[in-house]
Image (tube, rainbow, N blue to C red; front, top):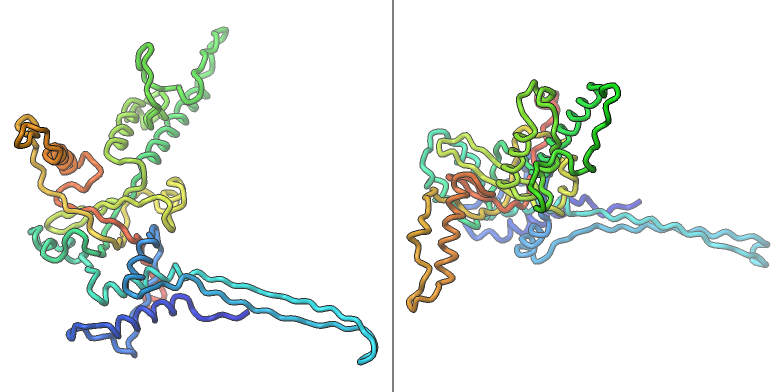
Length: 372
């Protein structure tokens, strides 16, 4: 089988060649050819390759996406007197190889954006313990800037959290039923249909849509950490999670700098490397915070929360007509206040949101290779 070349090298070379030929700033000096950049292996948690393709195409005019190779061979068999009479048949074999270049697309884009100074690594700024001035970061980047930041981050999914607590309550209720034999001669209690056990009473004739907290069933409190938590507390925790984190996977980054910057990113479903269910993701990466690198654009910066006074707000225009713009601004100020105190899907102050292009962690070398 024949190969056209290494997929990663082809795109990286194209990006580097373009960048070297288009530097307009005399202060930028391309790296020496004898000093190759260190190899970095990335384990991607998330990658928005559609946006990556769009950015790459804007700089290079197009993006190669696949490498195809076809290798064919043919044999001829003949029976009969040579040059007199004979019959023959042909057999053919064709092999086909298609290699995706998408895995090499984002690292090449990251290198290109950084070489052209479109991408800013802000890790040193947000982790600076001596810097307590938020304006230091705001002087370097603004909303829309492409950044890279490496920090400890936690993954969270409210639905996964509810399923775990619901499963624990079902297990505890089941254990209690196994350990407690029925009284002799006593009638067996009739159980509620599946999916309705443990729901708090709502009232006669009142119905509401099913919520995540309905997954929790009643269980003896002594079976859950010696009575540390109850079923009602489980439901309350799920309601808090459901209210603060809409459906989907969230990544919250914490920094240890003097400002105390926080950052949030919502990882959209259906993107590359994020097709696994939350159960699979958390079984792979766990729930504890670990170091992640995120590349993306700044969505917005949060502002210091100030409680809005809607009673003093005026939504009327010059002719006593309702001003839709003033109405929206007043309600958005309330949303900003709720987000600023950490009660909504937004980073608390001081913080910023990131529209992620990719989330990955670096693959460390083997211990013996580091020692050498």
